[in-house]
Structures are given as structure tokens and as C-alpha cells.
Image (cartoon, rainbow, N blue to C red; front, side):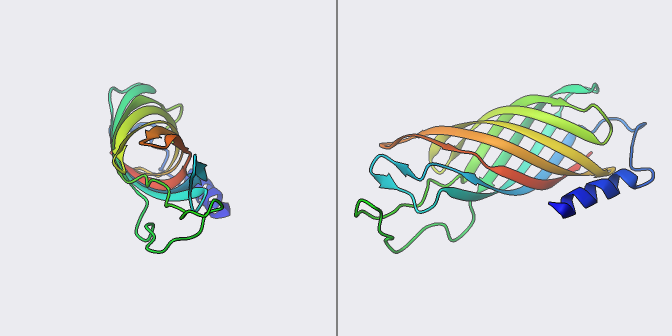
Length: 183
């Protein structure tokens, strides 16, 4: 966290990086890593952990030139390798613990972006996708700090909701830290 604050402060001090006269960016490609909580059980099913890790790759387009602009984004999420178990960790009810349904898949979202300054912007999105074989809905907010003309640090908060077949409602709340290229 100290490193992120230091890099953000350093970016603000870089001469010529403000980009005040530059037109706003329209295309964004980003990569982020994150983790977040989820339920540790659903009915008689116990999950081995109460958190999951994810990686995210996304591409977005912002329309128009104002400080408030509509945005479309596509994404790919992955929990990464090593998440599926071959053994049977014992659950409190004597059954095997299961791996939480992975957030692996593709999604699309629409929202609005607000850019109050040349270095800072925020976005609010609502989206859906097919992750680990189930349709899931999500809401997300993202903030970005531009560190150079075409690069920005990002942080996002997500609430993902869905119904797992045979188990009922599920949720997942990851926080992602990442970088994006914009032009």
C-alpha cells in the first residue's frame, strides 16, 4: 500500500504528465489482480475457504469527450491454476469440503465514467457474464490515477451475485488492484 501511495505521489510530480490539453482517452486495456470474501458454506455444502483470488483482463471504450461519459467494457476473469482439489478435506458435517465456484469466465458491463481532472477518473458499472458455468450479475466501481500519458493505476470494488444450481444464492466481493493502458 505504501508503494502504491508513493508511486501515485511521484506521478503527480512528473512534469508534463498532467495532459491538461490532451483529448480524453477513449480506449482502455487493463490487467488487475485481486481477492475478496465469499460465503464459506451453502446449505450442507462447506467451502474450503472464505476468500478467492482473481485475475482480470479487460478492454473498455468510453464515448464522447466530456467529463461524464457512457462506457462499455468486456472482461475475462480467472481464479488461476491450483484451485481444484483432488483430495477430500473433511467438512464439519463429515462431508468433503468443496472448492468455491470459481469466477472464471467472460462478462460485459455498461456504465458511466466521470473524469474530474486529467489525472483522476472514476467509473460505475453494471454487468453480467458467464463465470464457471453460471450466469452472474455484478456492480463495480473503479478509480484510476494516471501516472503517465497512457498509463494509470486502478483500484476496483465489485459485488457479484448469482444462484448456484442446487445450492441457492451466492456472492463474491473482490477488490482488484491493477494497471491500464489508455489512448
